[in-house]
Length: 99
Image (cartoon, rainbow, N blue to C red; front, side):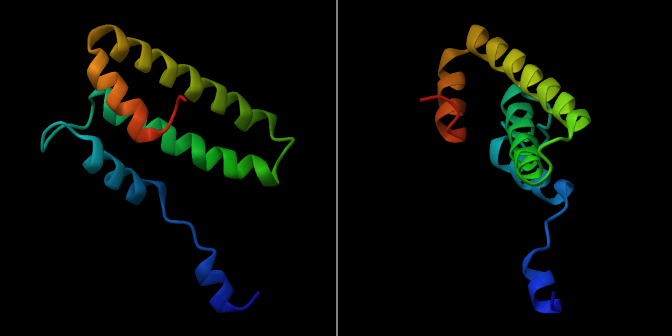
């Protein structure tokens, strides 16, 4: 693999992507823990893990982590749906989670 190909295949560190996601979904300038931000960050982690599983189909240990993340996201979405249905619907549509 040439250095040019390696540069194109580089993956951004999760922390850099996380900052962008937090900035996009935060409610105020200091908000990092609202349900919307947490769900968006978990969704980003799930997308990254799904790419990992395309190459590593037998990675059972990471699959367990994936299931924990899915479960946590589901709980957060349930909470948001119960507390504020309009914020829930806006988040779902923005992330493209449900049809």
